[in-house]
Length: 178
Image (cartoon, rainbow, N blue to C red; front, side):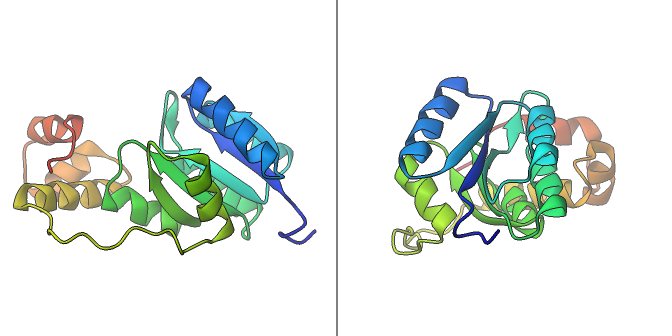
């Protein structure tokens, strides 16, 4: 079945009210929607029948949404996956794209933005910012990138960055600087 006629969509997010609202909105746009609120349920849905489209939150109660993306890409390499997260950073965006995601949206994202990303609509993209990242933000992004490259292993990341493990844990627990 080609992707244009296959409108199956898997939504994976642990925010149940958001999940149900987005599910209804995507159904009105012609998708056949299946929903999951954990990594395990998401992977189980992929194994049942790999959808043509997916919207996956990165931080879920039982793990990382990247595992769902990896399982989906292994089952169906042509699937169009959009990553949705409230904890956006460059490192996870790069990792998601390497695993097969086509776009990366920060929460809160509305149904129109999600639909546009799924369908490859590039007209509504944000312009590049006028102000560059602060030095603190660049440092934080670098730490996040190394953390992802080390498969989210805190000890290995601390060793590679030549910093104490507890210091790294404190940095990872904080929100990104502006």
